[in-house]
Length: 469
Image (cartoon, rainbow, N blue to C red; front, side, top):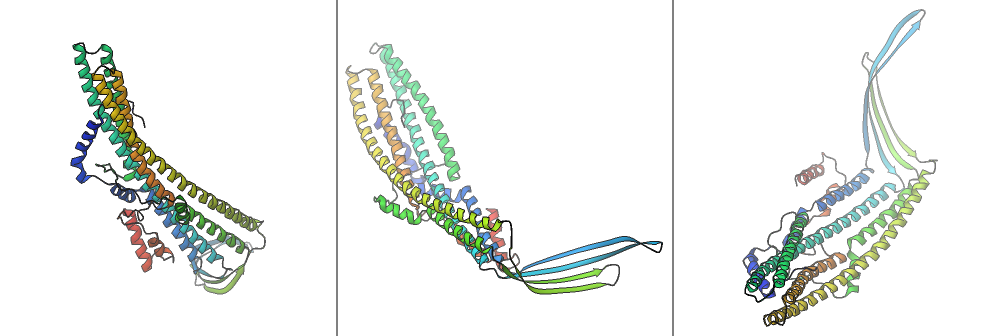
């Protein structure tokens, strides 16, 4: 990023930065602190955890299909009419109450129900990987927000210090103009530099305000005094090894693998749907005549075998559709592998570029400082003009701004490498925060407990606790 305003003294600005940061060091917030807050306060994570719980319930519903299904029905019926016999007419009517209970139990369906259960389990595993991918996104967004606040706050400090020093130079130029040492042109150049610095400061303050809003959105609160990270993630220099790690553990790739497994199981489900199923059925019924003493008690138990004969090609279409979806998921898996390896390569390339830019910026600041000091001394001897001094100040300011950006870019690039590999999680970063356990809710619902069972009551307490958070 280029800043278009002169900077008078790099040493003075550095001294001011040290002066401002020294009393705040003891209570400065670290990047790890911010990432903890991002993990705990993320609405996006909460949303995807709820989606994972919904996927867990699909397993419970599939398991329920193997259990007895019991239903009840009841009705009160009024039958009425009018009859005529041998010239006599009379009204007729009866009122009856009926109560029935039906039950059915799947005995055999060629493994279709078990295939559905396995397919939903694969979907759960894929959804878990999506949650991990979202977690990486949340934490990387937090890194960006944290470093952007630091970057823009340093820009504001740079601008403020530069404006203060330029105002001092303007006053000095006006004083020298009064005694005839410089021309009106020199004063106008100093005035233009001050006005440009004021404009640049306003822009930097606006960028900082936006960075603060980004921080609030990503971290869940306003930033305090932030500490520039000094320790970088421990990254391998072997890009190929990093790609191999990513192919084994990146959540996007693992999700695609589970999606393929689920799609292959769905083909088997569609094929078995063409076969019959065997059910045990039972029925109890009670009927009462509410206007008389008549009643009936009925019951039945039996074994029912049913299956499709002709459904207009729907079942064959469903099977072909499942095969097409499997092929699509295989294509998605292939693309995910290509994307993961490309992202790792890009992340390492960005990190190398950021490190090189930082090294070059440090050298640029050193050289610009020497050049500025020299031009300023030559100006005192009359060998340089005021414009030459202002240009040298501009070069130094740009160099310092580039170094600020490069420092932030190196941190962001390093964490982007972790994300590309699949290692940017709260657990991998050792944030020291209680992480979300995807097994906890699944273990409660995987056997499809009813509300009145001990497991169901425990689950109800968990749901109430989730609702309060």
